[in-house]
Length: 306
Image (cartoon, rainbow, N blue to C red; front, side):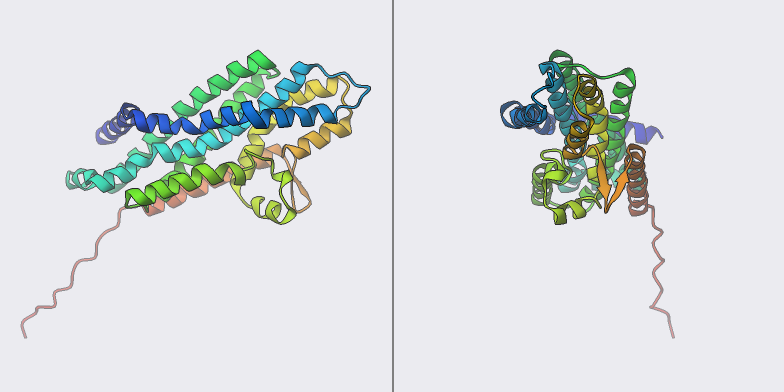
């Protein structure tokens, strides 16, 4: 255990010591903040305003709370995965530089090393995501706070589970990478694609039916919807209390993927959490199997004297 804790400490220190790697991990939250602040935020704000009937007066703070809730969910849903891939770069860099071989020459088990990479990635990713979460809480408090104490707690739980998902996914994928080119390619693909296939950048409901059916098989879709339910629930309740028709509120939920349907069957929030948690357990099993110690078969002695 002493070796394990020393390796975790070493990996965490190297991540935060490498300023380039640390700031790279913050790129996704910053890009999303700029993207929503300059473009998407106004689009969603206009769509909410247009959905309000003429005879209903909805305070601007409630609309701002809805937009900030969507921004909050999008940043965290993406960051918990993309930041994990950035944090886990050390696993591949140790292979490239030969540090991994040097570590395994010492009396160190392969599975202990793998577990230390996983633990360090989880700690660094969760630290960055909690930092982004704190920024989002402050922003929401300024523009329109509609969170209850339960909402805050559930959001934090969502971040932990999504971080576990991102850490395990990155640990499995990065475990097969051997070169800097492969690492850069995977990082670019994840950063550019994950936000779309998870419904963070644009709601899944806005895609074509065929693509919607495909995305409903991905756990990322349910992870994004789960956190949206917790970041937007308070503002949606305030919207209904302000006189917004129930049908209009339901349409907003459907448009923003708060209400998901799997081939005609409604998916509850509890089921979304179950799917995400089940995926985490499955990925954990795969990661353990990949890194299980294997006993080498003894070589047969073919040089027997006749």
